[in-house]
Image (cartoon, rainbow, N blue to C red; front, top):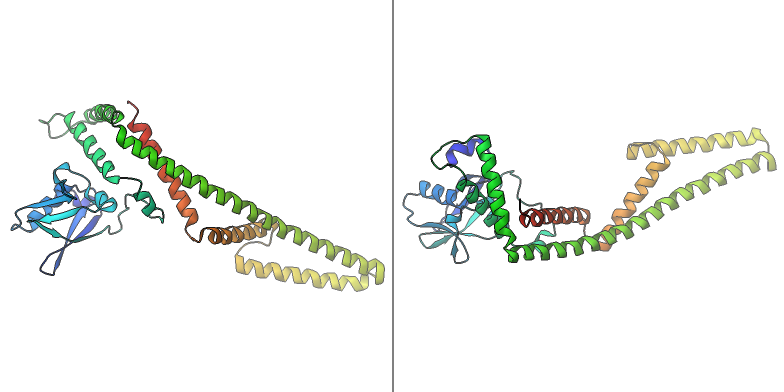
Length: 306
């Protein structure tokens, strides 16, 4: 099975360490199941008699769970002839099942991704049951009908499995609390950054007014336009020099909107880093929202009859 489909997908590297001090690298598709991994190891090493993948004391080899996703979220063991072989998994550029985030460790304490793998395996089993086992190929209509029947049966079964969905509800409630707390910090920081940006613009307006009244006083109070004109020219040259320096450094025009945005962004991220002591805060917030949306969809479609 692996040989037929390996050329269609980017392969991950499974580095299996042998007790004798060397290691072998197995190329595996991202969607390979536990049975596929066992078969691949047996094909490579004909001397191995008993190869199995376990979670704790439970043998999960025959459940056909997605091996890569299982490793990313849990710590399954590879046991060969009653010996636990250590291994390393290199995705080799493949997209992982989850998004990396500093919150991932905290979420893993509230969630059991092993259940996700069981759901995938159960859905696959239900879909296969609705296909004609005597046929080697199926039409799109037959596959679509099998999927719809599997979805209906799948939803009916999971609607009665309250323990799993209660766990997901608890995870979602914790996520909502995290999101509310994070958004409160963002709102406070946004208000302060906005005030700082407006303060900068007000200072520029005050500076322009001072310059205007200064030239007015020179022209009509002390001297005449013959003296004030070169001074106003020099002030204009200074402003052009400042604008040119700003353009060279920032790559944008010297405008009030750009000045406000620069001040806002600088203040915003300085305050965020100071309040949270983290440079990944906004990424963590986005990750938390995506995780909440995923769990919400899982609860909605998993507990609703199709």
